[in-house]
Length: 225
Image (spheres, rainbow, N blue to C red):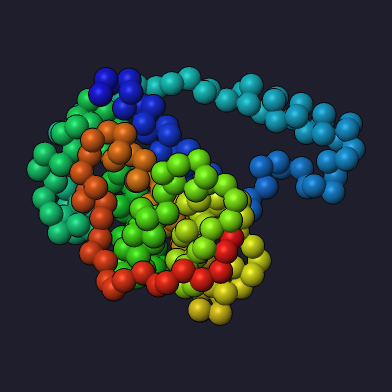
């Protein structure tokens, strides 16, 4: 893979991460509330204000200062703590783009130091995402049987068509004891798994870099959606 292609791979992975969270939690893509969008003059004013703000920002691409060895050394303790393995040459396929290694390190830090979720739950989410990744167009369209377990259903829908999450799905998560923070962490875990699934396939990294030991089989499928 060419060095520039690694940049594209990172963009694709981050795109899947951000959009999964936004779609799963139905984050509005527009700052203007829906009830006010019918006023054309107000929509135009919002665009002008946003354009004025962006015009004052420095959006130029910047060079990355850290070297591959430096970044791997920095994340080595976290990598060992999170995976039980030494970094060694695990990131060799992306050595030309150390910022990609740093991005993986940040994802590991979020998963293992910030998230409120048990590792077993994160591992289960990764397994559901891997199994739910569409292999043909029909799997990303229509309706399909989804897992009966609410966490696995959340991960399945979040992988196939994240915008289809419903208030009922969220309510079932609350019934399982997840509060707002817990549901946000579930969405981040689903987004992380989708991001990683694309990244290692595109770059040649080993799937084991981000994996966790799983516990038990996935639940059987239940409702359709």
